[in-house]
Image (cartoon, rainbow, N blue to C red; front, side, top):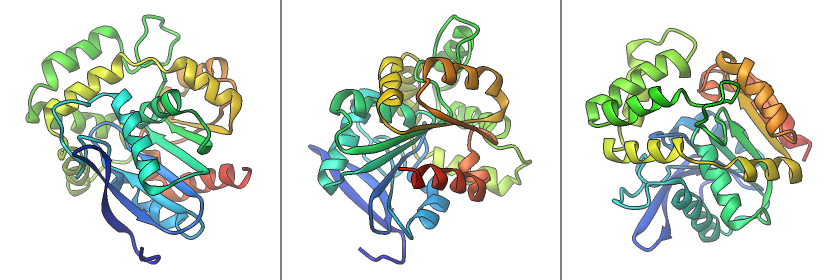
Amino acid sequence: MAKDRIESKYVTVAPGVELHILEKGEGKPLVFIPGLTFSGEIFKNQLEYFSSEYRVIAIDPRGQGYSAKTVDGNDYLTHGRDVAGLIDALGLKDIILIGWSTGNLDTWSYVQQFGKDKLRGVVTIDMSPLPLSPDPKWWTEGTIEELSQVATQVLTSSEGCREFFSEYATGVMIQHKMEPDELEYLLDISGRTPYWICRQLFCDAVFSNYLEIAKDVGATMPSLMFIAEHWQDIAKPFVETQLPGYDTYVMGGHLMFYEYPEKWNHVLEDFLNKL
């Protein structure tokens, strides 16, 4: 592998299923997993920054980016198994798993099914392990009515998905006013995921429950949760009470590592230096 550039390649993680990854650097591995519909490309700043000391790998999960599009397996239990397949195929150990948004579910799913023996720590970015709850004090992705409306009325076409992520990018992900070219760039990455896969993954994410495994991770290994500013009043107390082993850091919007890479990278670097 060339040490001085980002390498793009495919890794077989299950029969007939290849995941696309971006990789740079040598050393102990940092494995980045993006959220719903996004690809490892969103972590380019982290690939460049951390590759001077680490082997940095950014995944396109099944159904996303340039990875295989399959009619089955568009759920987070399968995503966890795909992560295990990737780890085995690349011979990784002493890993820091870093999930963003629904990439947190990939991370917790992997730990639930395969344990922590190959991990040094876990970093999760801005998503609850129990995304749906009627409790108003719970950190959720929205009300039952809101999430039902998105699943059954919006994510039913390519146009609906694009509209949803356009509103989400400008209202939740990014704090600055984006120029049309930047928004188009983000929507083009998201648009590599077919709408029907997006809908399957969205519904599976909403009904996922990784609370107990997330608690176990925090209690038994170094763990960090980044939280966006817009819901810190709910999310920070939630993490501190429900996931007491996690360090927390509040900054930016949902896509804070992309919008504020220098600050975000330094926070992650401080966490890694303590391990």
